[in-house]
Length: 139
Image 1 (tube, rainbow, N blue to C red):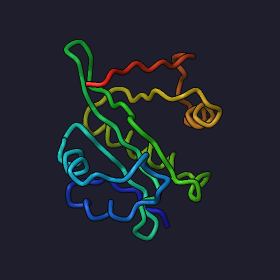
Image 2 (image 1 turned 45 degrees about the vertical axis):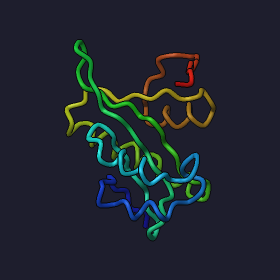
Image 3 (image 1 turned 120 degrees about the vertical axis):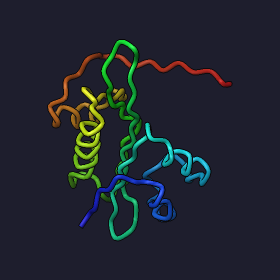
Image 4 (image 1 turned 180 degrees about the horizontal axis):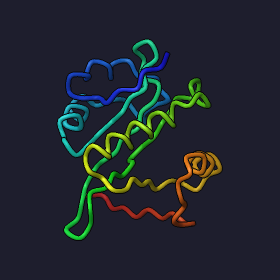
């Protein structure tokens, strides 16, 4: 059975057992501590017998002219656990949590791949754009 939980600072030890396909790289302990201590950052993890096999992270925020919303930063389920409803459970958990934080909307920017479009369409989310561009600079 796969458990989905909201990770808090008391769950740090769970991040010592992560499938290599969940995050982009190794967990950096100081970054994990900082993330879990930040009340605006949220991460739900999927656990299979103590192994993190999926995660969904988000950040809630607001602007002076907008109600609070939740931005989905990353969603990942390791290959061996895909097509089992885990991503849907992770997103649902983040949505439910966002409601407790008085968020009025949840949104994500994703590469317009067949997998991403199919997944969010299955949730009946609306597609607001057709192109994705990311701009960055080294600081």
